[in-house]
Length: 342
Image (cartoon, rainbow, N blue to C red; front, side, top):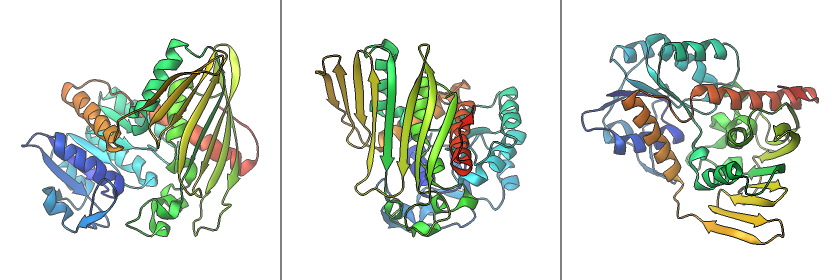
């Protein structure tokens, strides 16, 4: 197979490393890159070389048009969020299968029509939400589906991380996360929580968000957001609260799901999950033997398996559109200071 990468920053190189390990020896990798920085990153985002294209046998192409002439089987869209739509549209028009990193766009403009085109053409497509492959998220989903904690009454998820240290190989001010024009901001950058909660509970009825650019970072996007969603669950409208920020030191990433018969608590940084019964006793306390790259590796394997068998993927881009709609509603609510209905 022939694969194309658009963008080889931190997430692009992570997918590249995993693809390189999983691909067949005869497979070929192309890359369409604008900056064409050849620094090589490892899984800890350390710079370990400056020979990226040579190291992975990548053939550079100067345009998408030239790339499509190589009979590309699948494109990995890993450039800034604001550029995702244009690449995805070009791939769909050409009939190329799609792996699109999250969020699948920075706007909903034209997205429904594009996804319909992708589906009508039968293209294999995947939205890159690797947190769904985290063992804590998978275990929590299984527990919820089993109704072990009864009927869910409330949810609180939190993540916070100092934006200036997220990518230690670059100045945070140069990153897409810091720039509105590239689709940055904490809501879009940290959209994973909105996505896995969507996979748990479906689309919220309404969204309200408060926050903004509240810290002193040199960015032009929000660094703090508190999002309150009203979600239908077993005939009740329950509150689902998500806190996100670019400020916290040390980083935090956890979730608490409260039910009538118990509670689920998991920590995505410590890889720990606890379940409590109605009496407040711990019935399960598990710390998973897990490396962060495992979820990216499993995500890649899932996509490649679907590609080789030409079947529907675990997270099609239509689901990526649902998560994007929630994020866009949160941004709109924050800007207007009012509840947004979905």
